[in-house]
Amino acid sequence: MVAEIKKQEKHNKRILQQFTRQAIPFSRKVPAHSNQAAFNLIIKAAGINKKDTVLDVACGPGMMSCAMAQKAKHVTGIDLVPKMLKQARLLRREGKLSNMDFKQGDVYSLPFADASFSAVVTRFSVHHFLRPLGVLKEMKRVAAPKGRVAVIDVFTKSRAHSRLHNLLEKLRDDSHVKALSLPQLKNMMRSAGLRLIKTAFYQLAIELESQLSASFPKPGCADRIRRLVHNDKPGLVSTGRGKDTFLVYPIVILVGEKS
Image (tube, rainbow, N blue to C red; front, side, top):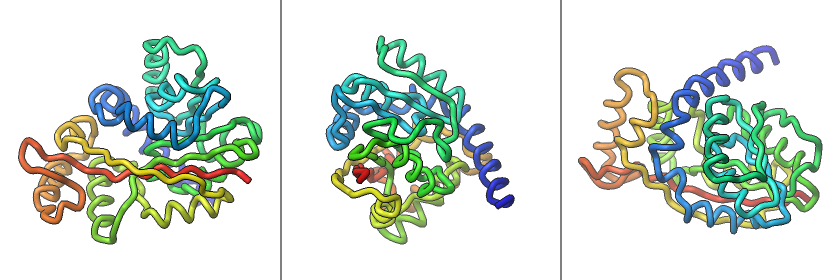
């Protein structure tokens, strides 16, 4: 138990270091992260409507939170990183959204009572969690009966894809833990006690140099990433070459219902 706590504390420090630096680039320099068509697809799949009180877990700079606030009764965002939350509050102000609030907190122990929200969502976060099932169980706990729990994340399609994707992401951002396969993500939803009611997909394409400029890889890692992507002949994680090289992320939206 002590070893697990120390491991989690060390990982939290990595997340704080990485995402304190990434807060502005993540929210302002990578347009793919704030694609309105993707937001619309997520909102539709999760069934977000004017009656909903929504929790956005690991909300980051609040882009998804603000998109949902335009459709929901109220949205709360929670994140570990103060600088991310600062960007989220700026975005809320820019959008003149009054039906929102943001809190700093630990996603493994959400500071909310049982059954507090009609919908609980997390986007692009599962691959950063050491114990994703633990987070998902917390999300289920704070969801109301018949409430929806939505996970939106990258997934891997094969062993070769998993090896290359996870290597690249770890080189780019050492707070990355592991992207899961689609069966693993679905099994995790079921293990958390959720009934899977909706699955949807889309693809995220981010220009390689834009992604690197918004990240803070260790010295030498950016060049290694470029070499690995250049040698990705099957196109497992990329498309195009030269100035038109894009990293391609398959994204799944999984929506479960709390029984």
